[in-house]
Each structure stands twice: as structure tokens, then as C-alpha cells.
Image (cartoon, rainbow, N blue to C red):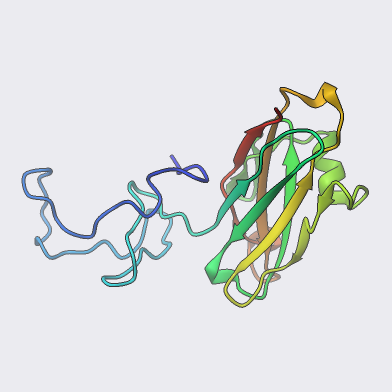
Length: 181
């Protein structure tokens, strides 16, 4: 299981042993340095780890009303990928799309093709680019002012690219979901 983008469990864990909560063969001062995928957890003084077995290293959040004629602005976050190219995609389904042993939580449909193909840059703005040095960027979905879109669920995620990474994909974000109002 992986935490979804925007989960309240992100950065809500503790590095301290809570007495009487589990039986452990480890010393009470033992810190778990990596999650189950080998991604680093924050060390003492660097912030709180995520709750659960997975540390979210790549995250996407969004803000906006979701009303046709308005925009949803996505905040992309992948601190280990500063300076790398990224690609955002949106679709009408949660997928998954297999990428090597990992999955991207989107479905292959016309919306995904349009969002990654660059054919509608006024709708899918900054859906590809390069993350800044801190590993952040913004992308915007300008929702067309079409009443028939109301009620559509839109799934959005991004990945970072790395030539030496498996399949050319360095990291994959969780999926951000919203419904057009």
C-alpha cells in the first residue's frame, strides 16, 4: 500500500518509540532509516516521517474550485530530482499503467493522450518541463467551460525522467483526484 497524494499520514509519523505499542527486537533508540522501497526517511531533526511502510518521496497536490472555466494548479514535489525533466498526465481513470515494476495511477485514454501529447497547451499548461533545484514545479489544468464536464473525475500524476533510471523513469508520484463541479 502507498499513501495517496494529500494523505493526512504524510509527514505525520514519529521517530520516537511509543511504549507498549508493539513488540520489537530492536533497541528503543532504533530509527528506521529507509522505507520498504529503500527511500530515505527523514533523520532526527529533519522533519516527521510518513505513517506506514512507504515514505512519500514524490508528491502532487492541487488547489482550485474544480468549476468549468477555472483552473486547478498542481504543485509537483520531488526533492531528490531537482533539475530533472518531468511529465504530468491526467486521465479519467486510475489505471494502473505498469512502468517496469512500478505503476502510474492513470488510465490510457484520450485525456491522457492529450495531456502528455502537448496538443492542448491552453488546457494542460506546463505539463512538461524541468523541476527547479529544490525539485518543485507547478502545472495547471485549465478546465474548459463546458457544462457536460460536471461530475467527471480527473486523475493526475507526474513522473520524473532519468536516462540511467529503469525504463528512463526516475520517480513516479501518487495520484491526485478531483471531481469537476
